[in-house]
Length: 98
Image (cartoon, rainbow, N blue to C red; front, top):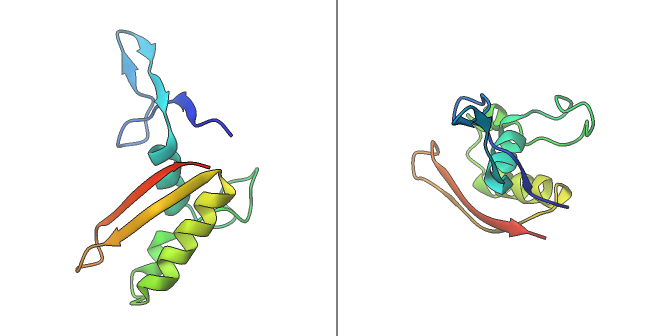
């Protein structure tokens, strides 16, 4: 699976430079979209999605990490490490293509 495509801004708009769409590595962009999506929201892959909002009151970091790894793997992404900040508001992931 290739992870090269059209890039988005932090607001999920098309990234445009010099009047052209920007292309590049989309691994982290794809991973962010998968984490923010709930299962059923991606029509082509209805079981894909972590559903981060559902983990707001969940204190089980292991469950969240498992969900991120599993969903990333199904999109061809190998997660090397996941660090969740002490407040639970920041998640840092290191990943690469499978």
